[in-house]
Image (cartoon, one colour):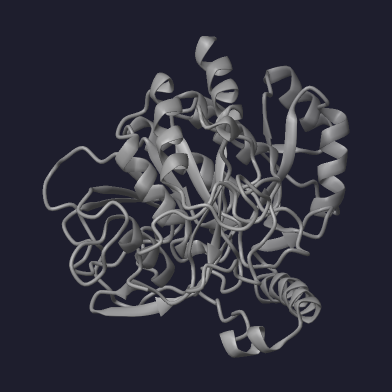
Length: 422
């Protein structure tokens, strides 16, 4: 019980420079799905528009992206009661018992399966939406039927930078067994020389692990060495692919399973470059991983300040990271969260994107791993009593930007300002 209390208390002290509070998440624009062809306006288009116009443009892009995803994958994805994309025909619940399952069955909710996510001991029950019911209606109905349980849709989460899978690309694999303390939840990682031989991958979606541009880029910014140098250069990485080739990949269930695996494998710091809505299953999985000593770093997303708060970055105890340009100005497309903890380079960041290619990329997705890598160097193993000193050291490392002291735009300030070969 001491561990459950210690982490929130320790994190809440971060602003005092003693321990840390954290939150982080990554943006959406180009979706990390096989049919991903949605991107932000080019940099010239963004910078030439007034701020109000940029916000409106980003807001419309977000709406269009969700509409396109729903339209193109009607057999696998449908909107929840808030219009957010989720796995079609499935309602997920935690905290259920046999009596609750029987009660749900009487009302037409057939139990599809039930699993215990090892590592975080999270019991997930999946119910089929009753025939003739929409997901939105089923959510409301099952929530009222099982008030003691945590009921939600299995929401889809997006990457926050140029995405897309890669064809016939070799996956990066660990050359030999070894202890990795860095975790990544994203798409699969290609065998670029900067990361080859130091990545252990596991899939949590159909067709996974399957190499992706986005997952490869984030991995290289975490542990890359050589042509692409990461914030924790030369380290080993545990990479969980929650997308694979599944149009409904990147869902809350997959992320929960990935967190369980990373906890089991001893990951101390995990970067999640994905964004989406608040979700009860995801919130529980994040909290349980934190209670076991894992620190989670996430990007704030690229949907602009007018977008709803992004998750998992907005969850308590998650380190929320925003991106800045070469002049250390916050990216106009940087998303909104309940808090901002740190900033890092997010414009023209050099990263690996395939087995033999590199590109300069833009987005908060590529700022988050720079903070995650630096944090991992100070926090090499999960241990609740070491969180305070590690986060305090990262705070002192940060270069203050914006208003003096911690602020709502840059958090504690800039981390790894020279990273990405800016």
